[in-house]
Image (cartoon, rainbow, N blue to C red):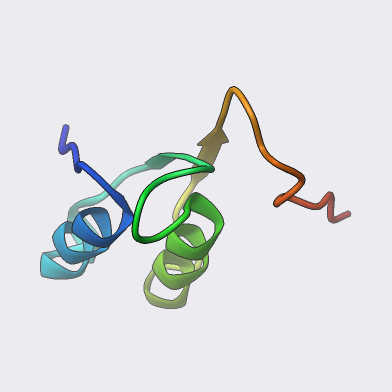
Length: 66
């Protein structure tokens, strides 16, 4: 398991070896890069990667898609 202090650090760690990740779990609201941006960039490299977004407060930043 890898942890990061913010979205930028998470993306840096992910890009070091994207194939080593089985799952990406992210908070929606984070400093320097929010969760939806992290997910979008991560899926650019690994479109099949399972994603879990969590939050206690979304601030209306997430939209539902079919």
